[in-house]
Image 1 (cartoon, rainbow, N blue to C red):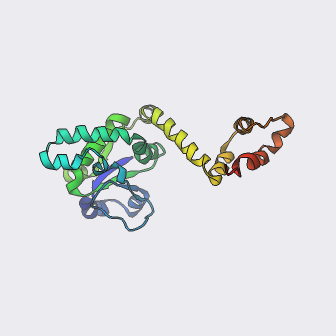
Image 2: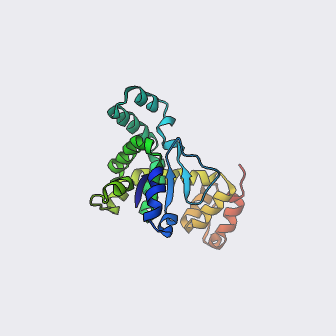
Image 3: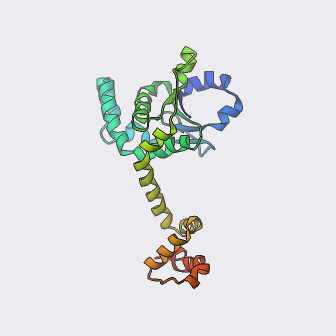
Length: 220
């Protein structure tokens, strides 16, 4: 499930109403200019590239000048289109894999998180449980997550992300070794043949050794 809460309500409400196991089982995505992180903490990551201040179009300055949420929404939506893969990898993919993710910001930053969660819902059909609303009103509306719909909406982005992940792994020796461990026989043969090595049936038992010599350990 995907949740959101601001830091103030996290400290005053969530720690009292959620069990310790519930809190520790979540992964936290900090989308905030104000919240600082000291080093790396398990289950917590600061997603700076989703913050509107990182957009070159001056979203925050424009909003501060005009205080117009319609302009903010339009500009921030345009920026979020540029980082859809990051949104998918940070929120959508973990939820599809049955992880609980919680977006964290300061209360004064809720205005742009409102836009971020609207974008996630519109693009990926992934509803967000608003814990701020839960602690204010005592309830949230009906929630239904259709994993098939979310999965289908993310197909193109998922494929692009997967291809880029493979390219990154192919660029290092350890990455190529990891890929080799996941490959089927036909994939191993395809790589070797691309490198000009003719594979016969008698070579099938030695495919891993050939890949190690001709691909994994190749520094070129």
